[in-house]
Image 1 (cartoon, rainbow, N blue to C red):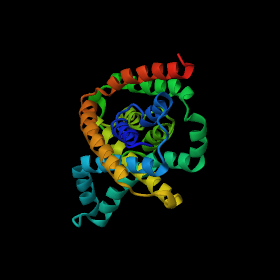
Image 2 (cartoon, one colour):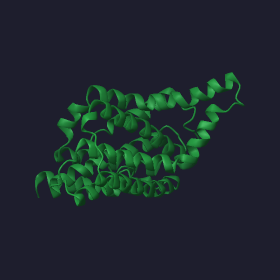
Image 3 (cartoon, helix red, strand yellow):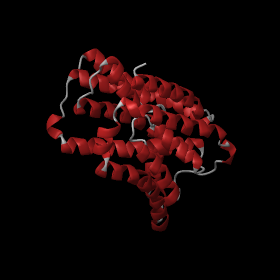
Length: 269
């Protein structure tokens, strides 16, 4: 892979990882249309590492408040246990489905679905999913993710598991799932990326442990990791504002276009 191809993939990763338009779907199309080779596992892992740096930086004030809440010495033992349950139960059950997918069917999914012929259907699914959020009444959304019930957390987790398919956006699916169960837009946005931070970081660590002998550093890789981080941070600022104003559905237009584009690529029109 040339430096230019690596740079393009870094920008693509930073822009599409967080926007509800499926980064994996774009990667599959880029490989088909432009002949860009699939990045090495090492390069792919560090691009994801870059975008997770963006998540930590963007949500750092909220993460600090969350940690201070959990570890505050002012909490009584009973109050402390309740706060930990309120945080850990939603996080555990939103992450559980994608962990099970990763353990049992991830390789099979990658072999079957990482081709252009399935993208029209998965992009259509994402487009419809995002479009339906236009009809959610924001004023009726009252829930916060801290203290969310087991079943509602699991429901959002199923959306996250389904998003392992190329063309289905992880952020779009989980944010939409959060809105469906009644989370405030701000909380649906936050919960989506906290869940992603844990699942993607877990995957990152697992792959390093599994394939540690192929992980290496070079200047280009480090530079493009920071490129992905910068692009990702800017996208988070944009997406946060759009979600709070109830405009997540706007991305359905783009996904419909991607559905048609991928259909044309598949049919070689």
